Image 1 (cartoon, rainbow, N blue to C red):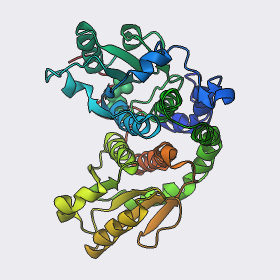
Image 2 (cartoon, rainbow, N blue to C red):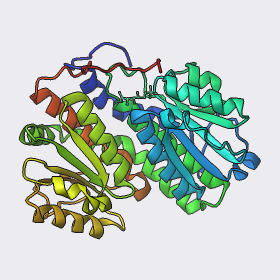
Image 3 (spheres, rainbow, N blue to C red):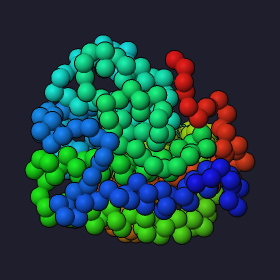
Length: 364
Ligand code: AGP
């Protein structure tokens, strides 16, 4: 895409709407229907090496770290390799044990974030294999890593990441599928995930067509004292990212917690002035999540749910289309980008250049 605003008032709005084409681009030319897998040309990890991986560790900062949380879940679910994500900024300062059987993955939109680059350099110095999941082709992290997956989101100008977040999550789904099919993921499951991936662009367009409704909701919640974001397992990274998005662009204070952690402390914050955004995919945890909504309602908390069907315990529900459960985090984040955007607009914020922030943090 060009740097032209293309009729949008802000780059953030433009980039949110570019997601239909951007997701199409990250998939293009990579699906291999014959073997129900994907081809990732630049990965530089052959099947024998992929089978030898005992653990995956994903490193990134901010939104990139949040995509790493999604990526780790996808890799565990589809490839059955233990995986986790950690902020690169923490990892590099704690003298981590670098294990030769662990595959390290650095994730970054710009490919220039200093903390992530420093983590890569430290890992390389200790002989680790490091892949990159990066948007900017030829960037420092892309150059320093042994191989990887380009995210192909196109240029992202707004300081607040939207389309690159979504495309990176899709790139992780591709990587997880690829590793899974080399290991124990069945042909049938491979086909199922591929069919789900192919549905994404159309489903993203469907979510974006609900923008007017989300704008009204944003006006209703914009004066909140603070917002609580909750989700369980697949919904949790979505809650983390949505909370960061709202803070960055609207300056409304927000907290994100695993839904199950509410009763261990944050429930004390719930009151009518502190609404909760609950991410409730229609998976095996839905009943547990509904019980959380009841706990919030019992404390007079207002609830905005993002779910696959109307939630009667919630004050409002944004309904998103169903896909395969593993891919839920990809679609469920998108209405919450619009919520952050319209909250910021309602509050008159400088959307493309929020105060105190830079697009890429290239210093310590
Ligand atoms: C995203 O909305 C943020 N502005 C920020 O958290 C960003 O994701 C982070 O600084 C990492 O940037 P990178 O992806 O370019 O490495």
